[in-house]
Length: 258
Ligand SMILES: Nc1ncnc2c1ncn2[C@@H]1O[C@H](COP(=O)(O)OP(=O)(O)OP(=O)(O)O)[C@@H](O)[C@H]1O
Image (cartoon, rainbow, N blue to C red; front, side, top):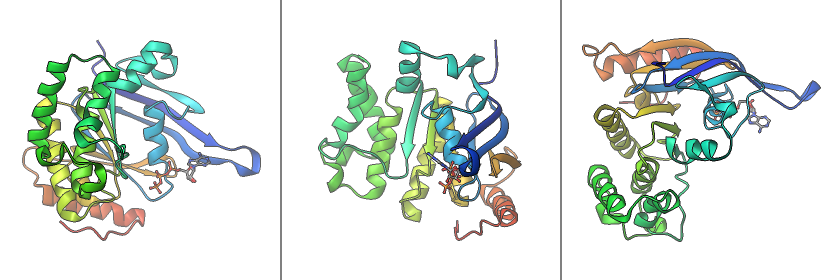
C-alpha cells in the first residue's frame, strides 16, 4: 500500500516550441501525504497554476509523471478519468466560477445530480456544509445577490459536496478582503483537520499560506525552498513570519498583514 496520495516525479511542462518555448515546469518533484494542507507559493509566472492544472489533468505534462496512490494519472482514461476529475478532486478558483442563473443551493447540488447521489443523502450533505460554512442565508440567492466571501464559501461547498480526496485551490482568497479571506481559511483548515481532506493551495497571500502544514516555494518551475509548520508548538504568527522571510528572498515582496 502506497502511503502517499500524490507523488509528483520530475515534472516538466513546456508551452510552445523553438524560440517561443516557455519552460513552465522544469523537473519538479514532491510528494503529498493524505491529509496534508500543502501551500504552493512563488512569484508570478513561476509555474504554480500549471502544476495544479497538471494534477487536475487539464494540462498534459511534457515529461515526468504524477502518481495518485501509486497510479499514473496520465493512464487514467474514460470513466476512471471522469470519476477522478468529477469526484476525487474538488476545485476552488479565485473568481468563484459559480453559475449566475442558479441559486446557491442549485450551484452546490449540481455535482450531486451528475454523480447520482440519492436526494436524501445530498440534502444531508448540503445542510452539514451550509451550517459549517455559514451560508444558510444565501442558499436561495443568486450569485449576483451574494457578497464575495459568501460566493467563495458557496463555491467551497460545491467543491466539497462530493467529498473529494483532494481539493485544488488556486488563489481562493485572491478576490476577497482580509476578513473574508481569514474566514475562508479558517473553514478550509477546519475541514482539513476534521475530515482529513488533502488540500493543495496556490497562493500569493502569506497570511492564507500560514494556515498550511507545509509550503513549497517554486521558482522558475522547480522547488526553491520548503517550509514545514512545527506542530504543535509553532503559532500561525510564527509560521507567517518564516513565510514572509522566504518570500522576501524570492523577491515577491509582501503586502499582506495578519
Ligand atoms: N497556455 C499557455 N501557453 C503558453 N504559455 C503559458 C500557458 N500557460 C502558462 N504559460 C506560461 O507558463 C509560465 C507559468 O505560468 P503559470 O500560470 O503556471 O504561473 P503562475 O505561477 O501560476 O503565475 P501567477 O502567479 O501569475 O498566476 C508563464 O511564463 C506563463 O506565461
